[in-house]
Image 1 (cartoon, one colour):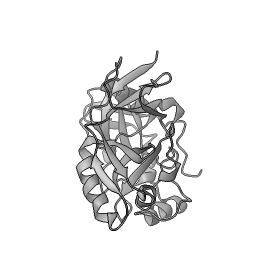
Image 2 (cartoon, rainbow, N blue to C red):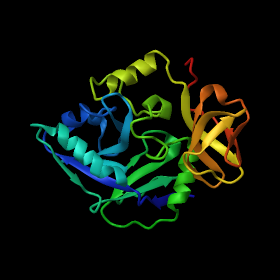
Image 3 (cartoon, rainbow, N blue to C red):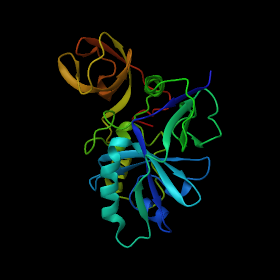
Length: 270
């Protein structure tokens, strides 16, 4: 059955002006020029040291780029992007009151909104920005269960600002990085992490046998801390885990943890 859920924790940042694509491309991990009608781009803004700050879906309209981002991140995003605007012909504004964000899955999204397939995975479904309310038949929690089962992050607490590396969170396999588009902020560390094989931990879905631990709860194996819980719903969660601990008995709080490596995730040798 086709599902549509309102995502009230998401907002929209609008970037307009003649230099909008070149401006954004110099800052984010993916190629904003590939955003088009019916095709969004998933990207992240990093610190100069290559650590995660925020991620977003980039939609394109005839005269603007629309960033579907965590609503709580938008004030910080505006501040940081304005700092780098310099003489670029761009305008930046919080457009969260003009558009509402929805997720659709198990079928094609409605055609009455700005819509696109989720660029990360076909199974993820679609993203929509609508200037008017749409009838829904699923909840934000339903969507959380859907994306967690697929191993897809949704900002904090899944991704830690100024700590998480993009390759730890699947940005390579999930089409969140353009390796051939030229320089962007934090590119050097991202490239070095990939080509030297430095990824020691990964974000992945886990099954919970016991009460759901709060985000940030340490995960231990044989008394040693090997990761921590991120977002959860029901009996599943996302967790950041050391790759060398996946076959060990894992515990977080009062719950036993069973990791499930998604089919899209590459092994360290791949």
